[in-house]
Length: 212
Length: 177
Image 1 (tube, helix red, strand yellow):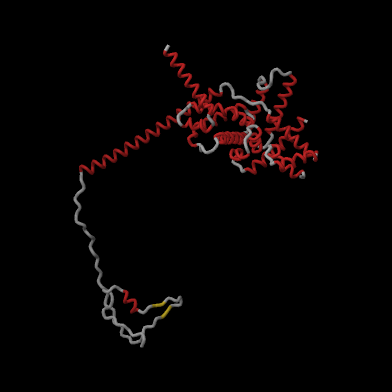
Image 2: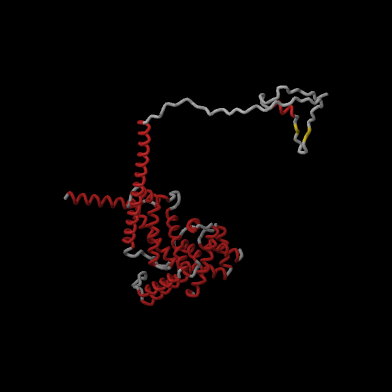
């Protein structure tokens, strides 16, 4: 009986710690982790895994590789969190790591055409997978149209030059401010604005024939 | 507002970061210029499509894989810390041993009493032969070289020579004669 009560007390304690971490902002969670609270890292992972996955996936266009890279981001965060300058935003730091890893991946691909071939293979396997994101209650032709449109949008984004695409995704998908993008991409504010403007125009030009 | 200015401001216009007056000018331009209105609609429609892309969720085994990698990472870090601790301990032991050795040597073999200070032998040189007295009755002429440096008469130099090397019979010459 006493054992059950003790177990319940422990689970309640874990729950309250988790709730407390959820209520904290990033900076406080980082401080908690550095203070020895290992569960704080899980909270950071929960907060950023989906956002980072989408960002990396939209940048490199390969889902499996994107997952690997996001894992690598978290490993690096875990290793170097004690070096993180806490006067800055944690999200900017995490996105900088992710952006650099995605950039390296694209650079490696351009050096190694074999990787490109593998990507094509993966994409063709994706075709055979069941649809995951569409509303299954829709009619089949609607689903097809949606899926087709999604593919067109993704292909159009992939056609943008790498440095334009990066800025475009950070702004349009992640909703980052110009200043944050400048910090993440290590460019000045003027360059960010210019790249974003060009990326928007190019993207609209590419996709216009399909949506008109 | 012309079309060029509209295009320049369009980024801020779409992001809704324009000041009130500028915003009104942009909106008015759209109503007046069909081409810019089309451009604006094209961009906004494209952005809407992109922003509405379905969100991708991590795969089911994402957390498991990450946990496994983090565990390995933790173990590596722990191993590295232990290795560093061992290295530190070894270095500290060696340093302590050297220190103890030195202290022991100092305690059991006290240093000998200081001896009298022995100075190195003085090397004396034979004094130079005495200078011949200045017998000339002509006044010394202070000449100067082309560079403008004065060449002092030997008598003045002689005054600066240490007494033991100075000629004892040095005579003063009357320059004013």
